[in-house]
Image (cartoon, rainbow, N blue to C red):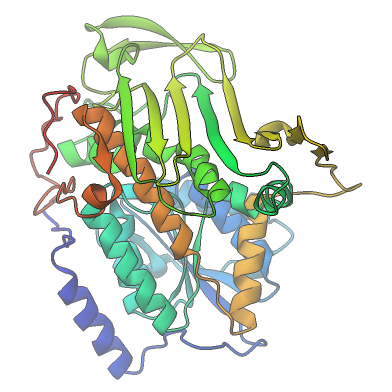
Length: 460
């Protein structure tokens, strides 16, 4: 295969194509759709998280249908559709994905967008998110985009421009930072913003998990090209995932910024490295500890676990003098935790979202979140419920003011760890470090970049 993927420097062609479609009378969903009209959903990136998002989207509105699906490969489409039909077996009317609207390849995203959909779900690997957001907004589609929104500065700046256009076109642009959509966290951070702990002094967060062993069946023997191999195992390559501080631990960084009312940090210093991923060790057999406490045997040939780190420790600094400390690790058989702590002049907030523990202690007015009887506080569902309600009301939600800042804060932490330098917000926003390969084709030669060495790795 030699299909060329449009680069982030070639968006003009996409914009021109979208304009031509509009001129030709192809439907675009700008403005308020008739409440009685069925909304058509296009699903791009049909992996596990995407399948969950599609399921939630189909349950968020009584008059929607899945119209088109797209992925770089055919097998995720078939697996996802089968799973969705099983979960929603009592709602067959939600599915209208004709065979000719199952699009495969690097250009599948554009074919889904051009298929007559009203809303798109963007859940591909993060590297492609800026390109897909831009194409969807240019075509007048409402967008749900999973986090993170980009993996580098050029990509994030593209998303910022697309977000502006979404507002101009009255289009929804909603993120998948799930904890922002849970009632428990909303109430907790509302208390913080109302002054329940006084002036914020320090913020701590942790995201310690076991090793993440994704897509173990895919390797160099059953993939045909460098690109297929790397996309199949996208999590382990910085250009595709942004590293795990950007792809996974970004949730914790998001809550740090939430506490600060989304004021971006002035600078960050970050340490990190790679000690225990199998690909960082000599070829051989290893036992990998998983986040659920079990283990799995893996054999490392070197390289298949890419070039991402397995631990980070970041120190964010705000202009006010507040400091935020974030720690994350993906190493098996170690202490696991996912916690948040905000220390104020009048009290301390402690949160652990997974266990729904949210308390304010050491305060004149201690507080703890109480789950309402029978309540199901599912942020994954709420983000879609509120998005579709806003579309129906012709008041589409656009959460870009916060999700672009969170994404950049995570990116700048990785930049600081890789380089060993202090990185300022302005430096990160102006960074020219473009991780996306140029002139990407299925048969492109994509050697794995070496693991970043602080003091050696150069920032641009």
